[in-house]
Image (cartoon, rainbow, N blue to C red):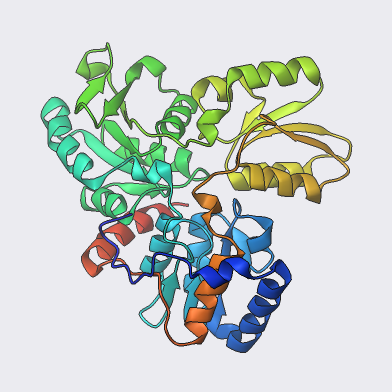
Length: 367
């Protein structure tokens, strides 16, 4: 949980919510949504369960949902069905009259948590000593507000999986080297696609405070934080080989958070939006194996009965932390707002938010 958030929270779900029937919870949520009307906005991330997505006012990626929350000026209460860093971004982009809540404070992101601000602040002077003033930091939006603020403070910017190539191109016009946090795979895949050789990339290990490379410092162009998405790292080359054997005509489409080897073995790779758009545009009867979070893959399958679609790994589990948000927690959050005693508010401190917005704005003006 980010140190930059002031958390007004009640950690444990009251027991009586666990005994309610699904229909009781759904009818109660419908009633509260009707009562609060335009003062309530529920953004739901693509990876959320269908039981939650059915009540979302909008679905999308994290930054898109934060922007929609900010644009919805009538909404005083933003109940963000996603994870902690997403709610932080929404809080930073919304105004003072809008309050952002996370239904379950345990809903985090293991990737975002891999880039700790204390470790990052320790790494920076070491890298500066090694490379001089030749580095610009970039952070994936899947990061804490503190890491976004770090990049803003040091002349860097945020990236999304959709804007990563444009932002890496921009970064190389600013400095000779890039320090990419927290997902090494997105950083590696993006830089490789732009022509940076793999041998010119090094991994920064925050646990040893050492650069993992056999190359001399002058050859290094991209420094990758040793972080990853546990969901996307679960797809392997063996999975692509199995699909090739079992379904020779099936195209493999993966997210760039997958490893370099998996992306190279796939037919195509792109952001969540790119994956959704690609399937939407695909001809009826086409066949696809998709390497991304299971809730989204299952939703895509149900929306496209005219196409043969499978998960690249049929035994894969949904993101455990993303799936913390469920009907009992959503109802609990909404009832607390209705009763005037809201909990689990996400509030980023003013200084951190200011620097983090600089990082976001550097991306948004180029997106």
